[in-house]
Image 1 (cartoon, rainbow, N blue to C red):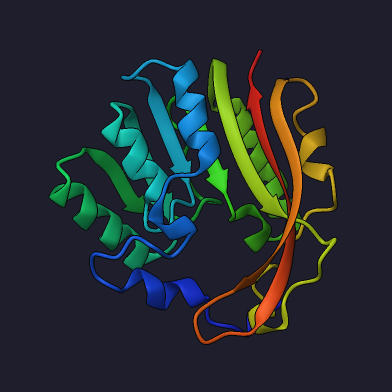
Image 2: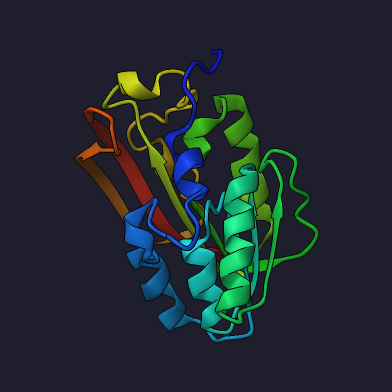
Length: 206
């Protein structure tokens, strides 16, 4: 499907100094919780990092953090904030479909982006994520499902919506720490209210 809508987050990423496009700029709850099981100094990857709320948090806690996103403005903001906060992050522009997983990661976060690529593409990316995770390492993945249709104001963006529960089947061979189904109503600046449905999973590689 051809994209007909400009992603709302591109304008938001360009606002200097404001890390508030998603989640008020705070790291995701699962990210905060999972590092309680881990030691600083381990390798972490934020795949589809946006403006970097999770990557900045991981780096501030002593993780060797790599962060990639297709958005130039998102990566520019992340690198700017990393410099201002004196944290080291290997952050660069890259399409997740083309990223070369050239080392093992103890934690891979991929939240809110897999459903933005076609089904055949995210299936390949998920397999690469799993393969690049070190034994005993963790994946935190969050996606939107087709329980709620793609909102009209974002028509053409969510080309790879998952089926309900489909994400969980990809981790049947891992230890499932948490799996969650959710739905919520949301409104972006200057946009109409709309609904999303999704699944989150936290899993450990055996």
